[in-house]
Image 1 (spheres, rainbow, N blue to C red):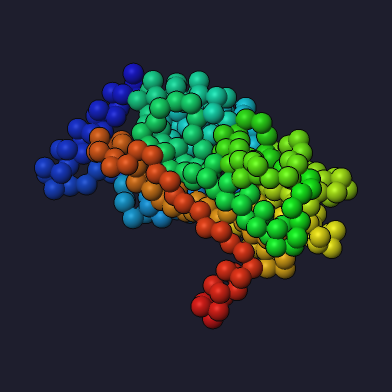
Image 2: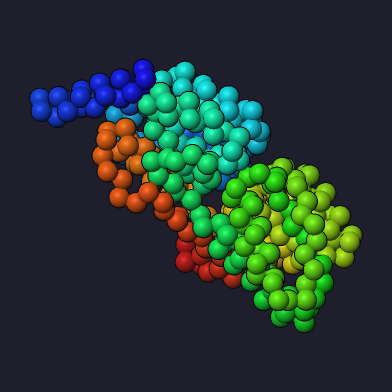
Length: 311
């Protein structure tokens, strides 16, 4: 209730300021971004987009809070810290759809506005900006099948290196990938979880290669990097596909260790998420409540074309 009264006072102050021709103080509006971790380049890009929008909008006290690893307890702690810090809005990429929900409900009860970026929880929010992960996962599977068929391979084992069994985005990316293989003669092995850690993911991918897999799929930045490193260490011979576009991943695509990756637009998530968060605090209408921020298929040919155009 305290937060609701503060939000009401903030809205009233803004209205008075507009009438008097003055501007509300920047510190009156506090927006905090909480991501799954602080390591992946993906989250760094979300932060950059949010920071850019905050600077353009003005009057925003912006902060990025993130666990050092994907951990539900740490993320819940960050939400509680954001509440204590007096956040007016929280932008969050939920590590899992349920674990953080109770903490977010406490924030809502305090009048704090919630906006999802990348990965939502099972709690209604002001808006969500994310990738259509199931569709993107299916595209990843289709790209792998296309390459395997081009090599004359129409059956064989396929491995999946996922983050964990609860992260909503990764679950949907796996579901879409599996859907692409329906009706084929390929055998998708039991999913293994690397927790987004590059070393763990590489060990899993190495084991898949030992089992004779013809293709391996990584569902996030750490998993994809691990898959690419394993394929490279094996001297090729396995088709690797995945998600995200860190420098390490793009290098693995360029040298052929990865066929391609589904590149999201995390900067757009952060940028649009910030605009929606500020609008929500001000009581303004948000035109679109659920926005697909899209993906691009990045392969070696595409990257070479981009470098040629840039050079």
